[in-house]
Structure formats: C-alpha cells, structure tokens
Amino acid sequence: MTKFKLLALSVLTATCAFAVNAEDTFSLGAGVGVAETPYKQYDNKAVPVPVITYESDNFWFRGLGGGYYLWNDDVDKLSVTAFYFPWEFKPKDSDDNALRQLSKRHSSMMAGLSYIHNTQYGFLRTTLAGDVLDNSNGVLWDLAWLYRYTNGALTLTPGIGVEWSSENLNDYYYGVSRSESRRSGLNSYNPDDDWSPYLELTASYRLNDNWSVYGSGRYSHLSDEVKDSPMVDKSWAGLLSAGVTYRF
Image (tube, rainbow, N blue to C red; front, top):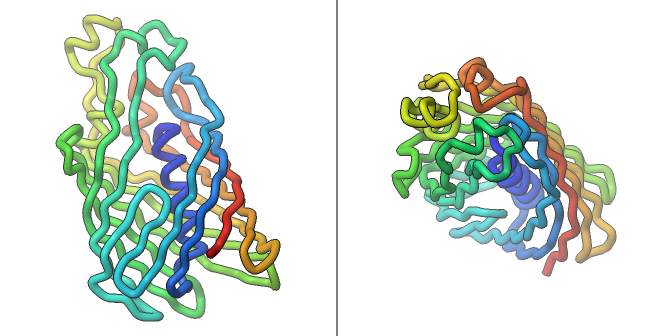
C-alpha cells in the first residue's frame, strides 16, 4: 500500500466506526495522518485530512467516498459505492535514484458494492470495487471483522481483515516495465494478484454532545507479490491518524 491509500482507508475506517449504527447523522472534522510506505526511500509526510460523515436511510458519505443503499436495516446494509482512490507513486518523492527514473502512477476513482452485517459479536465490513478511470483496470476487495466496544464516552473498534488486489492493480503500482527497466537499471517485474492481512484499531472519545476526538491505526503485512517488487524494500506498511469532529 502507498501512503495515500493507507490514509484513505484509515479515514474510511474511522468514519465507518462513527456511522455504522447512527441514524441521520452529519459531522465535520479535521485530522492528520502519517504513514510508513513500502516504496524505497520514499518520503513520509504528515498529511491533513478532512473528515466528513453523513448518514441517512438512503445515502451515506464517509471520508473519501459515498454510496446509495440498496438495502438498509439494523442488521444488513448493502450499497452501491464510489470513492476517490488516491493511491499513487511520484518518482520525485523517492530518494532512490533508480525509482526516480520510473513512470508516475496516478490516483483513480473506484466503484462497486459495499456491505456491512451487524451482530452482537461485532460486524462484517466488505467492499468490492474496480477502477472506473482505466488507470490500472484493477479490482480491490477488502474484507474485515470488527468489534465496537463502548464504555461511556469512549468507543473502541478493533478489527482484523484482509485485502485482495488484482494482478492489474499490483502491476500498475508495483510492476516495472521493460522500458522502465532499461531506463532505471531495475529488473523488470510483473506481479500477480495478492492477499495482504491487516490489523486496525479506531478509538473515539466524546467530549460533549457535539465534539469528539478520534485516533486510528492500521498495520498491514505485505504479500510476497509486493515485497518482491524492485520498488519495495519493506515487508509491512502502517498508518496513524488522529483528529477532531463536530456532530450537528
């Protein structure tokens, strides 16, 4: 995962934890995120993050995406979803001379289906989406089980999940073409699809009826398909983000 992909998913995780059991909510906030990326000698920066959440019987908006409910009750929530996918690679952000010779990888827009199933033991969260701008022609599937624990003003939502990335998605963001190989001196590389497990934790604390603070973290163990890329020198990626929200 890149810095921006992890950041987007962290925001979605945090706002999802706030909105899963909410009714007709609207909140605004701001936060900051810092990530460790797998790209070689890639700059890690603190990035400001706007946090917008809206939930109604028919529509929802969380973080960088939104959706329309096809089914929505207290147990099951199925929706058509679309979200901005800021996964990108900028050669100039790497201090590795070989990586600076590679082509830029662009962000995109993803669309597909999202589903949440609530139980007394936690909830299932899954999204299947594809690139609709034809940058990678890739597909992403995220599947996680989370448990929401509330004690007074404090809410904790730990989760465990796995993310599947298609061959096209991995090739676009981690592959090295023959022309790039000749230009950079890196070996050419064409990854297959992969599974990457992860752990995450979101915490929020309600200061009063309107104001809350939150923090979110995720640790992802990268698959061999990603770790074997000449662009990568780590076996994991991680992110921490924190911020404040105001509920109307």
